[in-house]
Amino acid sequence: MKKAFLEVRDLFFGYGSKEVLKGVSFDTEGGRVCGIFGPNGGGKSTLFKCCLNFLSPSSGSVAFNGADSRGFGVSKMARTVSYVPQEHKPLFPFTVREIVLMGRSPRMGGIFGLSAKDMDAAERAMDILGISFLADIPVTQLSGGQRQLAFIARAVAQEAPFMFLDEPTSALDFSNQIMIWNTLKKIAGAGAAVLVCSHDPNHILWFCDTAVAVSEGRVAAKGAAEDVLTGPLLSSVYGGRYKVAETEGRKIICPEF
Image (tube, rainbow, N blue to C red; front, side):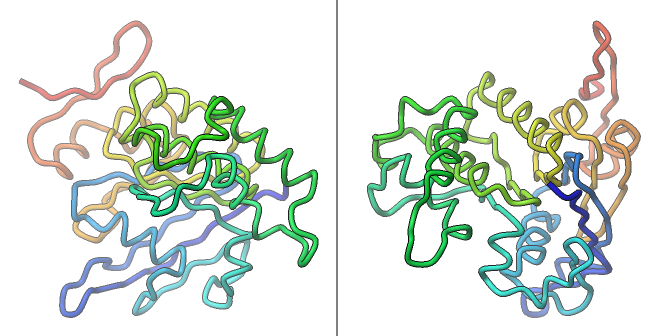
């Protein structure tokens, strides 16, 4: 896989008279997991939607491997970026296998439909996420956490050089949260640029290579995760008082009482 590179430059966006993004800029590249964090309403999800062409910023640009995303059609965007939204409520009882195979649609060859490569990619993605045993079960019969694993598997099967995930572990138990983060690190290790919105700064500290703090529509800090996630920065962004402690060789963020 060619090393991916994302450039976000001076993005502005507003809903009516309410300005949400106010000049957001950052970069990330393949081989890294980039964590986006900040308080509710700070602009994180809106930032993702602008990067994915779901919303059109009033000014600024987003470039994937040097190509301005404003020139991307739906098909090119689907081959470039996979996306896992924070919440997805399926309306039809597609099986898990069918959902995962939908990730292959940008790579299907016209009238020829699914190939052996597509089937192999879907089976491999389900195996990576540990949900092969759910392959023939309708997603409407799954728990919220199991559905989320299915949609992450769909993104894995898509094999895009960029992967965006909005709160991918919010519906998962602790074991599956750690499994997902380790899986994302493996995907990045294969050359993809992985961007994750998360409300858990500890997950970003433990699993992300770089981090971007977004607060009140602006970038409050960016850089290496361990440099960005400091007590003073977290206190400034979230309010309250926080510190970064170390226990048994691992850093952990906790409130100061």
